[in-house]
Amino acid sequence: MSPHDPGLRHCRRMFLRGLTVQARIGIHDFERTGPQRLILDIDVYVDLVAHTPQADDIAEVVDYDFVRDLVHKRIAHGHIMLQETLCDDILDEVMAHPGVRAAQVSTRKPDVYPDCEAVGVQAFRMKE
Image 1 (cartoon, one colour):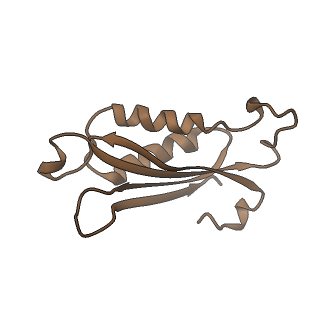
Image 2 (cartoon, helix red, strand yellow):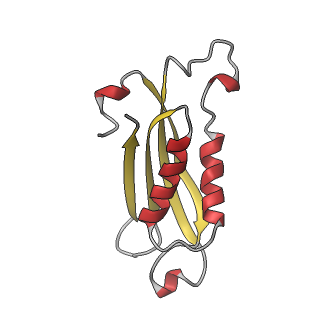
Image 3 (cartoon, one colour):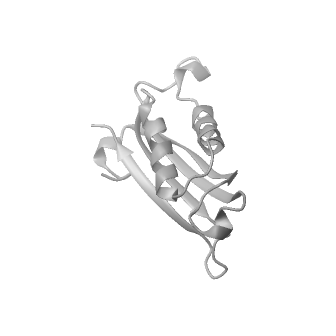
């Protein structure tokens, strides 16, 4: 499955780009001394039929505040060893929302190596 799956053709994609947080994450000694910059990109696919507003009211759509809030709550839990763990945890929470059909989460650490822009992971999941 991917974001280009035909099963998503009747979905709206909402997204958060460049959500930047200070997170305690990593396996290296230098990453355990304090928080570091972590950047997330999150795509959430919702069914157009069920979530197209008729009255221009936030209650009619999936509000992306819940995504931002769950990222901050997960980061607040304490040190995370792997980006894969964080990515999967966020994806699990997003997918638990009844209005979400599919989601993609990517995390990247831009300050780990001086010779590359960032290191990161990405995961995609879709409900049957």
